[in-house]
Image (cartoon, rainbow, N blue to C red; front, top):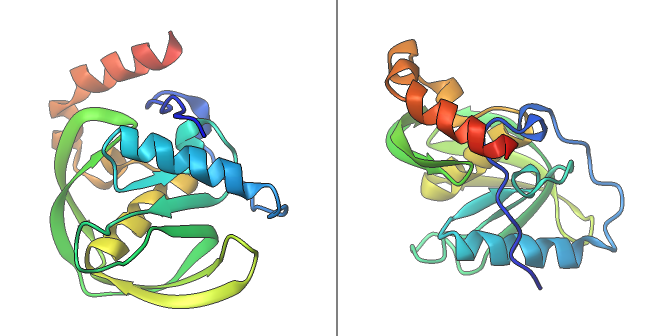
Length: 169
């Protein structure tokens, strides 16, 4: 398929809550484009709005760990329960070169649909849970920078302004 351009911080689509997917038959090529884009950019998760699409769709691939055997395609997701917490460094394809510690739930229970529209509820933990929470934030118009202190935001203000400038060009 095709590698798409990653939408950068500053683009309005990244600040809106994405629409629910209602048409599942045509998702295959979109998912493949998302996978190609994520792999090309060395990511482990990608939300549809990160390639400019207003749809509640994410992909997660942590197969390089022992947590998963194959990439996850998650449609119309809602986190229905959270427990525990951990702090790990995170980065974001829409915020290149910016990394810092983010506190997230260690375990989540997720209601979602599969690529064929089947409804599922599943529990995830560890890195998989963290990536799902990160991508869920994107689908709800949030960034990792929104989960940090004003001091950290101030530390990265120059970089954020430059990324916003690039998103407009």
